[in-house]
Image 1 (cartoon, one colour):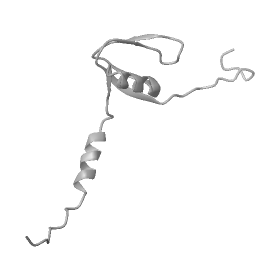
Image 2: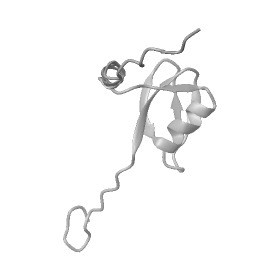
Image 3: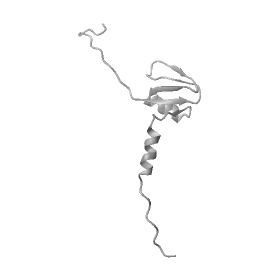
Image 4: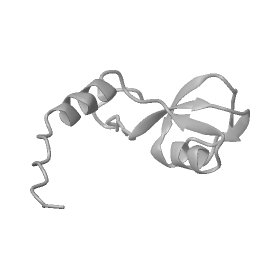
Length: 88
């Protein structure tokens, strides 16, 4: 079969998130195969599984590199509030 024109290969892509496991947990990334996820390890898993782990508090989201730096830069760009001109 392989890459024969009569049997074209279909590539399926899936959105994923990186999570840091806080506890050992079994999980199924595809609804068929069950994997063991070890505490202390970072895994790239499908969004639905990542959200389930996070909701169950057995994992936390690992932020992509540079994301925090971007948030800080955005916060610094905010202008100051005007002075209060109210008379006491």
